[in-house]
Image (cartoon, helix red, strand yellow):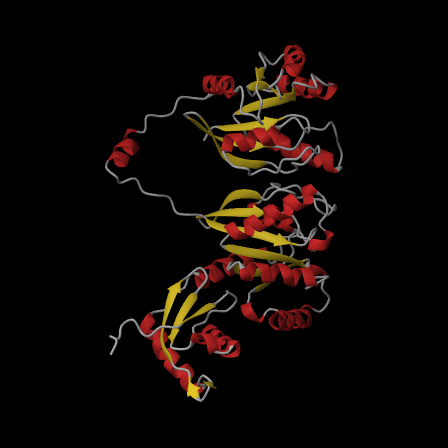
Length: 454
């Protein structure tokens, strides 16, 4: 698909335009310069034009190994992969020396470049718009990304540079006949954890390129970035997220937005990989993140990063497993994968664990098998009596998967102790091989619907 990359110095409105083109608030937007650090891709639409649009970090004149230089290299990679470059300036601020510097760099390249003067919703930007002619990139397109003004001019400019779509007669005929096959739905995986545990490094190791910005600084990732990838022919949407700190330590609007974006990625994902620094394992925040994932009903895999730094791996892993099962009994048996995201050692074991837990998360158990199991479970450990009368569990069925959820029909659901519900859940997990996924049990106070009332 045709790819449009949006570039410009910090705080000119690139992310605001990106959100408007994709029709969603995917990228974080704030008045603080330099909010965007990683490049983000989305499916853009402008009238009848469809294309891939890429948001990038603000262009900085930096070199070496500083963070700004690493961000610049990410933007350079995005430009190299694109079909069209949209260079944005702030119309109200006019042309700055940094704008002029990068306009000269873009002029020397072979890629077609469009020039857009943003924030032109008032006459205050008129002088800056005319000043943009001296950049030598053609007529500046006056737009307001925040207010949606000037998009008709942007449409005409992009349309003139997009190649004509191929006829695709066979596809059109199949669509008209209702036979167009839907592509396989990608597996959605979110990687979460505390700051500086190696989440972005793991993404780069998995996809085999420097896709995400990495470095020794904590909190480099701010947005939840989706990377489309394939593993053994299976499409995967991989979400790199901002680090989650304790709620009391989250200060400032930007960090709150990053935290909300990470939690949204957890809700959207099917499998969540919680990254933990094996040299500082299972702090309270790690357990809180894993518990949040379980309460949201996501499948969970725990990745123990920096495992190459552990001196006694066998004893260390046994201690971690014991602490995890004691602290999070509601997801007992969650997979632990030891790896080094930096060197790649052990990373090949991660995706097999993810696909296995995903299959468990989707598992359905026949109703007949469940009711045979219920009879055996209540015989082994009968429900307690209440007010001199024994509680009868009459019928059981699985009401949904993703995660597995079961309904038990009983005459007096309100008085069945929570301890007995936990017994049933643990027995279900053990007898039907459901380790590491949330199991939900609902008690319904009504008789068996398949037995007629007397």
